[in-house]
Every structure is written in C-alpha cells, then in structure tokens.
Length: 159
Image (cartoon, rainbow, N blue to C red; front, top):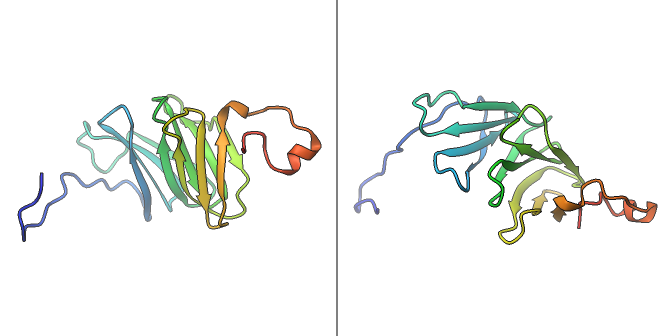
C-alpha cells in the first residue's frame, strides 16, 4: 500500500521501552508478531505486537557491557538470536531462557555494528565492525579442540 502523493503515513504503533538510543530492530523470521530491539542502554528487548503495552517489552535483558548495536534472528531456528555490541563481543541467545547467554564470541578488535545469519546454513553467521574486519563464524565448531598454532588465528568457531 502506497501513501497518496503529498500525504504522510502515521506510525501504527510507537514502542518506548528503551532509555537511550535504539540502535537496531529486527522482526522474528517465523513469528510475525515478535520483534526485538537493542540500544545504547545495553538492553535487548523482545516485543510482541499482540500486547497493548507499548512501553514495556515482554522480555528485557541486560545483554552486554556496552551499547548493543545489532540484533539478528536465526532464520532456521525459531529460538536463536544474536546481538553485537560496542564491548567487542557477539552474544548468542535462546528466546526460551534469556537469563544466560548460550555463547559469547570474541575476536573483533573494536565495536561490532552488524551481524547477519547465512540464508543457506543455520550455523553460519557474519559480523562486522569498526575494526574494518568481516568475520565469518560457524556455531558447529564451538568448543572444538585447537592446536596452539590454530589458536593464534582465533577461536575455533571463527572461519
């Protein structure tokens, strides 16, 4: 639906849970009423549009030690999502239990601005940041044994 020429389109709803700048928002890939947001308040918030409370998210998580810059839902797994932060880490989350991170990924030298899941492989994702680096990660390699030489190149899940 296109707005008529010269007409403004009003927001359907306005959500106001964050206390600082909202850096990113993403819709859940398989649940059309669920979306997440992250911001400079270091929070991850999960929202449900079926709720009439636009000022309170259904889940609020202290996600990182610095500003949270990006969020990405896994298109293959309805419970899995990523966040990336100015604390130089990525966090893997399970929507069923947001009290603890499933994993933390460290390899960037500066803040992370973007994370994106592969549309072809459920365990592969990419991240980028102000360190001018693009990192490709594979969840299936978490906790794999590494030789000392391999460890110099980064964690096992970093491709």
